[in-house]
Amino acid sequence: MVRLRESEVILRLCIVFLLILTSVLIGFDSQTKDIAYIHKKVTFRYLFALEIELYINVVVAAYNIVQLGFGWYGVAQKTSNSKWLSYLLDQTAVYVVFAGVSAAAQHSLLVVTGSRELQWMKWCSKFTRFCFQIGSAIILNYIAAMLMIILSFISAFSLFRLYSPKRYFQFKSSS
Image 1: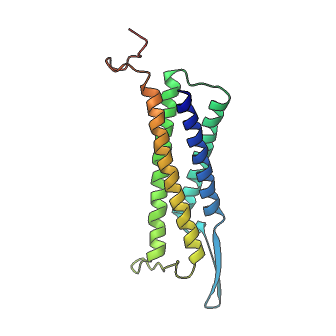
Image 2: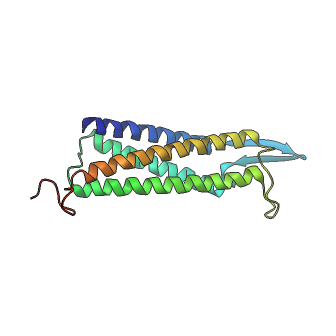
Image 3: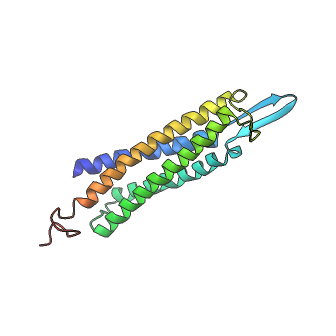
């Protein structure tokens, strides 16, 4: 059980690091170009999905820091209710991060390819550094989502190991 707890702490630290790194990459990304005598600056705020993804990353990183704090100060999850809450919050965090990064990737793909029907120009031919930085942030965010899936498996294991395999929703210790 100690190794499982250590691996959970390491995973949460890696997730927090990746989410904060992704937030920094998205938040501080901007590029300025002069296009036909017009001074054009592109930031993440032009892509609404990236702005939402930034907020999602900050909230989920804060949630993982709180979970690390509970583990650090010995607030052990001894009751099944707290384990259920942790499991459900871990699941929700995974789904929200994965949905947010998928929406950001789809929106960023529109920036790469452009859309004649929507009158959306290709940004990456003019703002290459911006596109590379956003692309790397999306890849790091997908890695964080995969680590969160593994963390969710650990959370599920620590919850469902309390229950008897023979009796439906009965604890192992109860007869």
